[in-house]
Length: 341
Ligand SMILES: O=P(O)(O)OC[C@H]1O[C@](O)(COP(=O)(O)O)[C@@H](O)[C@@H]1O
Ligand SMILES: [Mg+2]
Ligand SMILES: [Mg+2]
Image (cartoon, rainbow, N blue to C red; front, side):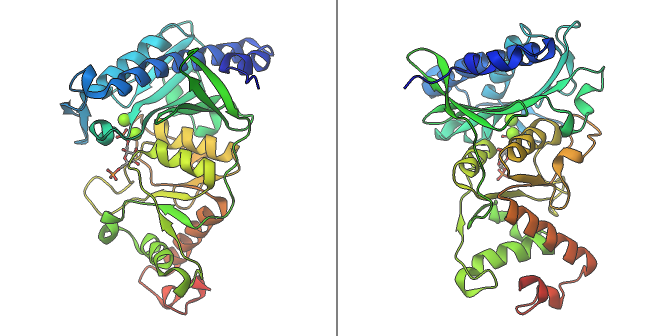
């Protein structure tokens, strides 16, 4: 069976207008960078000390050697595309690439960088917006023209939306082409699998704590079914699993210093994932409201993030609403409380 390449897939779509042709060339540039990053990751330690710490971001997050290399590769690839403004997790401020370009692109060049030296899956996330001036990257996620990520796992995958469903392409190493593997990924509406870093339990608010306690109680608790935990510590890998078999991912705000709004970044992590989720009939919120409606105030803004199977994301919003109405641990959250019915 012949599968369409990424280029084939975008060709028909991009005939409609010049902006679409620009989006297609930015996506192809990102796929080219992804192919190079994939080679580097496959070599691992043979390519150098990729996990060495180079420095620290203003908020204390470390910056590894490979964070810097992937940032350079992505920026270089996009400088050949009609991208006017480029923002990255790895640079304080957005930079101008092609002043005549029509697009603004925000990226997390390497998501999951705590996993570099463990031979686990990592990825590159991107969000493509219309260029409307210096504040282009502060448009809401609803303004995204395209979004996606490259996943460097046993297979190198490109997960993409241009607003017409969520597609998955797999890198064919023999030809170097990304081939269509899934025309319309769909997130199952219901699930019994959740992803959260449970080492932070004592810092969570009451709504998140109750939600997870109810999952942990399994068939003996108010949910009446057993749940499974999965946490890769590479959000992209968790997104991919959720696209394939459902699930819910949570990185809530918590009481640790600097974590009031969680860990994930709105512009280049939460927004592209939320766009992919909505296009796959899943959902993404900050625990209460849709991620895509939040107006970013700055490029590196953090946001609490909950995404995946619709029924679970909605349930978590309900726990938050009820906890807000009764801030103290209340009978509502008790063993036989209403919320747990
Ligand atoms: O180490 P923690 O707190 O569990 O956080 C893991 C989460 O942070 C991230 O690594 C953040 O992304 P970066 O690696 O790009 O900083 C996510 O991929 C992942 O889900
Ligand atoms: Mg990241
Ligand atoms: Mg990163």
